[in-house]
Image (cartoon, rainbow, N blue to C red; front, side, top):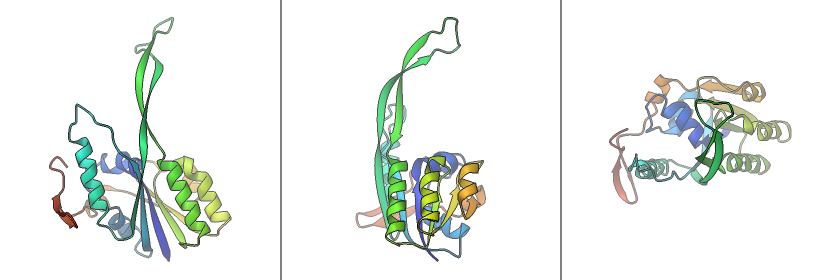
Amino acid sequence: MKTILYIDGFNFYYGAARRFNLRWVNPLQLAQLLLPDCEFTAVRYFSAIVKADPSDPSKISRQHTYLRALRTLPGIDIQMGAFLQSVKSMPKHPLTDPVERVDVLKTEEKGSDVNLATALLLDAFDNAMDCAVLMTNDSDLAGPIRVVRSRFGKKVGLINPQKRPSRVLSGISDFTRQVRRGVLEASQFPDQLEDAEGAFHKPAIW
């Protein structure tokens, strides 16, 4: 069954890779282990470039190295959104009466879910796949999933990276697989990889 894998990068990272401290993940290998009957013809990865963090100076470098590893996969398409920062007024903790508020700098990732939904719908419209597998637990994608199944007659499966699957997504998908430690351990890239620029290694603290 011709299948495209769609990866919600941060949903997967915080749901599974960081939770199990197994971050050097080959998502295609993970999907192939969980769904051996699917023929994955393309991989679409959606994320955003992280912001510099004085408390973690190698953060940007680690993400760059991981994206480089992803680009060694066949049929990979990486689409990056952005982080937006804004000042929000929030109640101060502990709560007082009257409530005292403070300004907080809030960082939000924007674009990944919209980009994923757009790619999913376009691929269905173009008849690029028979089945879509989404590596996410974001219920905001319920609408596009319903359209892909009902309007275009495609199968949609979920690979859930988080502890508890979204009831909404599970209820509208053809099948669901859960990411567990064992399969994640079996889906790590080799410590050393090579691309057109030469050899590179898994980040030391991973």
